[in-house]
Length: 255
Image (cartoon, rainbow, N blue to C red):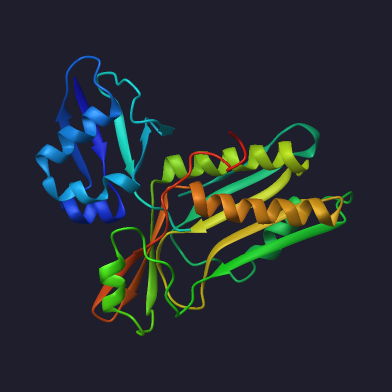
């Protein structure tokens, strides 16, 4: 069987390519396909312990059997396109987007106006900005981070597996609706180069009551950082460091 391996962030840099094609036997698993990729590119060996995998756009265990033509995405530690409004029953408005360009100064207000109804007594906005102080290096990046200890971060670079990232943001919105009853929500994330002080993520939650709106916004930002296949690297004058932790496939208390 022929299987396509997609590489991102640290694995992409280690391999020097975004994609590998591997041949595996009938009944092979995700783990078998990764072993075949490592046989082609031994530089991929060090990152295995912190990888998660996705098959055809959805998180999958290494033991999952593959079919001919499947796409396996190797998901290294995560940070932290066009989207569409999704209107649904009972006033649901859902906006999940990935922007390659800087956010417009009015974006938060624009989203609040699109989401809030006369029944909503609360609109909570969270704006995440890049900063000049370094974050926690991803596993395997500790030595590079130590080399830049004390240096000022000159900017961040974000990379995303966009189709899957949008799908994961939609799943997070589903969970917010189920947990908190919040049906009007926006999650918008940047990709590309983001200078210090500029916004990298925007969450807006509108609800009749403030407790639900606050809880929804907090859950949205925490789960986006933990689960969405979006990566960030801190750029220094003479190098960069990938930031983050191994991805989760679901909320921690979801089983």
